[in-house]
Image 1: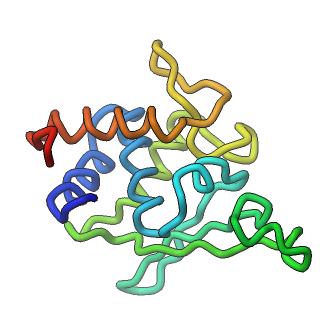
Image 2: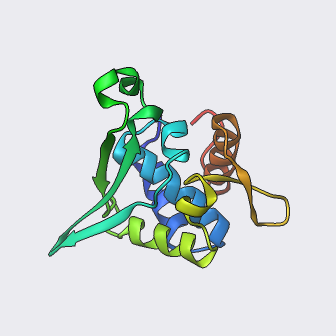
Length: 153
């Protein structure tokens, strides 16, 4: 379970620092804010967009119903299910814009890569497979540990 302080740390990590870390932290926030399961979000085949209206901003994406539990229903087989979350986080920053910017700087494109969250390679680039849940869990623990959170937290 993420605490408010942990979410705030993820927002800070998305706003600055190494690009690869910004991409990972931003994806964790995307999953958190849109309430999508890790693998469903990681396998998205289209990049999200940020929709801003005055002081409001939302991150929006669509999930192929074939990736969701409801996708097995015949009438939904070719549908896309909307995903929407707040783009402004608890620290007041627009984490979503920063995340999409970091993805762009690294040349990540879900439409080309075949997924929204590819696994990183040792050299700092990204590979062609999706970052698995257990790998993400280790990375998240490392990121939060570097910020001072204990293993128990």
